[in-house]
Image (cartoon, rainbow, N blue to C red):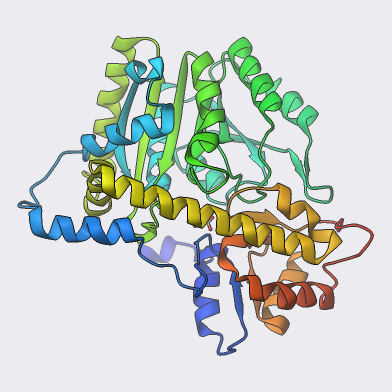
Length: 400
Ligand code: LMR
């Protein structure tokens, strides 16, 4: 049987982790996979997380099964943070715990495929490289459209409208709620309003991927676009990740939320989520969600977590400002938000940066701004310059 399989290439983003660790150079810089690093270059366990783990160690008295929906207290505690504490929407939302944001996307894609196998998933590119494969694996037709021009570092909004004009009622529109991965370029409030009006008019269903709340501007500001869209549409889905904003990457902590004004349909959809989870992973892993729950159930731990998240956010934006100030071609980086910005450079240049300069970034030219130290700025700029990735008149380079 196994002889019928074709060898699969390693995920190029995750392969960078191994390649970086195998590189013996002391001077190497990791701008690859999306993890936050502090001033010491570490990805620390957050203080609030450590305290919550100590608390769990002392108080958790059972590891019995929770069921396919996971820890619903965790799911519900996140709701006001995502949707707003006083939102009238809260009564129209159900959720389920998932293994990370990827699990939420996968479960959501399967729910769509079950409810409406003909639904097409509209995906603006560039996007997180795993988005299209996740939707494709759930047998949904993925329709992608290029909406960011890396040469100018701008959204081509006409392109968004043009692409979505081809969508059928009931199609899914995947949107990054904040901190666009890989470009760091988010829609303006005006553009979000136009998209929302368009979704309503054309009966399209938004599927919002919210994986970086609190790492753009603040918890509240980063949730605004999601809340705006959800306040207007009849149905929506939100894939949420706590991997980055709680620093729980390998614990795989996420949730999938469904929004509907029809309570009976919402209840039926919720039962489908549970049955899909059951055949996929049976029950989600508990530890990470238990940590988030312990933090959000304690006013003291919640304050510590929010302080740490603010520190992380301001460090990322400090790195952005430092890089932007270092070279005119990088000035756009200061305006972008979240962990990533995407240079308009070729795969050959990113390979040369890695091999010759020891500067690791995704083949696509995506840089993890949260991975660098302010001291790295000079080396990064010199390396970009040495490999022809900068040109003082413009950042524009054709993307291959
Ligand atoms: C990233 O985009 O670097 C992260 O979301 C890690 C991943 O799973 O790709």
